[in-house]
Length: 466
Ligand code: 5AD
Ligand code: SF4
Image 1 (cartoon, rainbow, N blue to C red):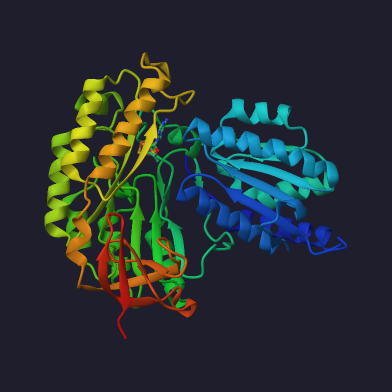
Image 2: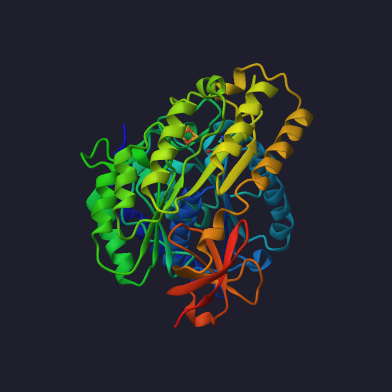
């Protein structure tokens, strides 16, 4: 069952936050917290809520882990190498705790939502005070209070379908770009993926809550709103409002802003959604449409519920309707049982579709998933070779696709210092293409008109138009 966290429960947590505040107020210095979130945007967004709660409790955030009174790692479980990095980083905290025995250390997120990992961590790292899973994020103040009050270690990883907590404090990393989760969890059970096990069942926020949040952000000067969900196309099944409808309502808001979203699942991505983007005022001309594999046989084994013919049809329709659509994807190499013949179909698809960019991963076995039980005869070395071949093919496609922009003037949301060179500013076009140009820092966080003078195969260079 999906729970809605009540206002009473949140008030209770606020009360715990205030009690923590009075404890850390007694420190002889300003209490400092260091937090780090690994993995996807959803996790980073959870991290912003944790930072919001820490700020409410009176902590100041720091990048200097050595000076921190509180350290938190918000972990990711999607691939093994992310987990190994977390183990390494937490191991290193031991020395910091030795120097500062009052330091409080917490680990949360998807990785420790897996019980076997949480228990392993508890045993291996006795200096970790709090371990909590994805479903009790809102109870973080209470857990921290317990550590201060009772001097005991807290382990909280309840199994549940998930919940929705509205109104948690958020401390956003950026002053002009904001992530807004519209739904949580996933029901798809792609056979390689741990997400449905650690993030629970799919659940959508009320459209009114989302629209109010976005409205508030725009009024406060935010220029880019990134809507988040594991599969945004199945938003609102229980709310009577489809994702396309939600987008139209957000697009109708007044102001100067851009809406992006991720991730779209090809099985649920509709022509209606594509038409909505094409007819919008504010929605980015960008689709992140993970294909995962170019082989129908592998897609079936992955439980993806679409075939390549359907995928290509969607892409053709989107490219026809959305001007200069930027198309990106995710690909997994070396899924159990994948042969070189299957893999060649992925290469072929890459050559044919010519993605603007592709996030490519070597398959990582996740305990508890269906794929973990499948025969996986291809060696890691061989998979590595395939992976490099894929990178080469991806690197060789689309080299002159951006040339068509030379001479055009595009509206660019300026995000910071340049990606091609520090002397430039950098930003993104409505297609989410990277554009670098000269200008001063006061333009960061603003929309500017930039005339494109040069095209690289992964970015554009231009000059500001007055
Ligand atoms: N191994 C490798 N890649 C994975 N992904 C998800 N699970 C795994 C796994 N077990 C990739 C998929 C997904 C992206 C976020 O991570 O491509 O789209
Ligand atoms: Fe994982 Fe598939 Fe859900 Fe994406 S749609 S989170 S890949 S199970």
